[in-house]
Length: 483
Image 1 (cartoon, rainbow, N blue to C red):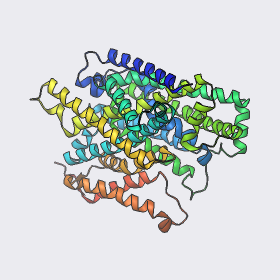
Image 2: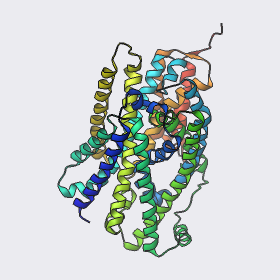
Image 3: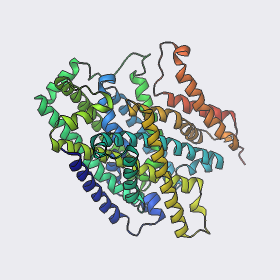
């Protein structure tokens, strides 16, 4: 199939997104943009959030990691389930009780304005780094498969995709994203299932036979019992729990969709339904990864890691499957990028610029400022994607999780201290604690062999980071005086 025809299919898909955006963005206002007027359907939010949680990185990197880490990623997914329980029954009731538009406003009421700004700033940093890493991976695949053959430079490809995202999120925000995420998740999961069925047929294997073949090569090893290994199941499950608590429950992008649901009970159902579905979806991605490596061995495909799935889909599958792969990949791209830009816009406008409290500002002025911030983040995304291209990496999911351990750790410490302790902090010192903790973790991570010998620290570095922040906050706190 020619790159021109693939490009036509991508444009057709985007046209559908624009139509949905136009329909859902009519008569929208700032409240629609930030929290969807608190009237989103919980089932739509739950289904759409699967696409946001997975992204193009999961679509490509999780199958690509099977030869290296086997099915160990499922250990992390089990941890996600535990984390989603905490989100549903600890964090969501808190957010609904306080009627929050920005979840970081909770830090203001509990610790102080500087703590509030610090938490929001760490979210902005973390979401920018993570979302642009996800965006880079998919843009790179689209560039290699389509745009490079059309003579279009990488930076132009990135610019065009960001322009597409701006077009359909510019007006409606969360109200639009709830619907577009649903469409995109449907396309992504449909593509996943079709690719699995095709490879099974190409290999002339049943599901049971393919699992047996994967098992002979060790791919299906799911639980690792060596305590010193970074893949040790207790480390991975515990890390997964805290990753979901921080990257979902303490993340404005994910939570603004949840709090856009009218009732707390429905929002809780949304999170728990997403958690259960995610278990099966991740298992299917890992199964696909095993199939891809069996197929690669049979057909002598040299690609590995993030390059494996695109190489097989675009070069060894029929044209219609290649089209489905591209559409599914684009569908995986947009939920992670559009929601991130919208959430970052919301956080800057509400948390840093305080436009909701500017009573002397007209609705039109607030809308104008929101549009400027929205475009600003599109430009930032372009710069960061180009930076990732310069660095490049074999497995972007590893990069994203590593970034999360450093940038979400302070948020974990801030929220944990605010919820579990009644002590008051010296607010002005909070930013220093939140910066020092990741620096200590960075040193620990890079010198762990010298310090810990054969014991390996993996994603549980997030927990250590949060713990250091918590201890630091305790050191600059005092007992609350009861009157």
